[in-house]
Image (tube, rainbow, N blue to C red; front, side, top):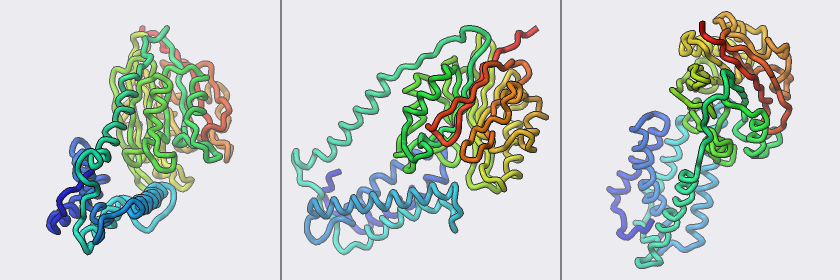
Length: 389
């Protein structure tokens, strides 16, 4: 951005207040109103950053580079604290982090000793900083226009489901390798894929949008359901036509984060099958929280049939959590296949990922392939829709 006139202190005060408000809105506002946060925050942060970098003389390349490098490191540190709060106990809510970051920029910008000077002179040399980001927009636009999805009717009254906690695309060795995740899924030739821990810009997984990447790579449209925040949640990919879709929250209660679910109604040879994916609280001491989340999940399902409910339930067969699903009239695909004890979380050997189905869906071909692409193992099953009589 080319800043020509110096900013008055009143304008800086407005920019500072707007930036702090945008930082609060990032977690406190949803829906179309959320668009106001970047619309206000980006120009305000640009003005304040220019104020911080500018001194009595024009800021040179070294000072500008150092400022942006320091800001980048600070961003990574704050983002890490924000995301670590979902697994670690911190003495304040992580919703305070975006507002604190805004204050860190707003206050120095407001109390700086001198008004900001132009970051670049006029003419062509002063316009190229604007041209570069605009040119970069060609990349996502081209990807969006080139994307194609293989959506087709089911070959018969059956479909194959894969459930997989993809750990944000990060392997147990700390490698960000979404291609490995895609290959594991592809090997099962699924019609519907239910995913948990789908990151959409988190610092801890290289800031990639794993949901969009897998949707494009597997050529399957995606339905996304946010959980802890808008950058993390559950997803359903489907090669079958999606008739309806939606998502909801299961609540935080005593857990570390808001958990959520995502759902889609897919067309299977003329039958409408409801598919629901969920991820429950993960700590051993969160049993009461999981039971409350299951209550909300079953209420959202409403007993409709045929239906599939799958996900990382963080509970083993025989536990009160799994029994709650069974009492609701659902059947465990792995239990019916005699594979209920197969671990899906290798580090502890626990079978905590599950696929449940209503009685009018007959399971066959259950599989739990081995892989090091995620800290979980996927499970897959073919479900046949019983004819209505």
